[in-house]
Length: 214
Image (cartoon, rainbow, N blue to C red; front, side, top):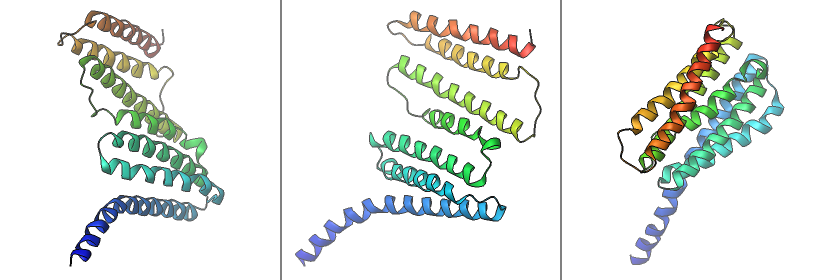
């Protein structure tokens, strides 16, 4: 009885550690099969893109178990999963033969990956404020990519200078984070606020210039 109980206790950790791997690989295989089937159904199937699609899915799947473990390894898993997803997206666009129209997705995905770190807050107020600004700026970049995608597929038609609005939004984000830093008492607070306010005001003014067509 003791031998059987010991074997069971040794087998359980291995089975638990293998579940995230099996789940990630199953999801990767299902997504690859779905994309390949959809590409074949559309009549634009480029089989050679599988050499990019499948490795990208495997790279993304390898980040899943690290994310499931949590702790310090979760960030490494997140980075690996994001890189794999980007490679997978390239393969999918090539497999469908729509790289010319779908390339803005390659702007959206990296920006969303950076914006997705928003919830990982640093302990120091200054580091937390800078990270929050970077994450929100990345979200603005994702909106720029989405706008480019809508333009490429002819869903919207914007006049020249539309990107000025996003420059103003970016400046407002940096300015808002500078204002938020005034609530904290810390060293070099004035210097940090000054370094944020200056570029923010310049970005808002330049964005306004592009937007108004001056």
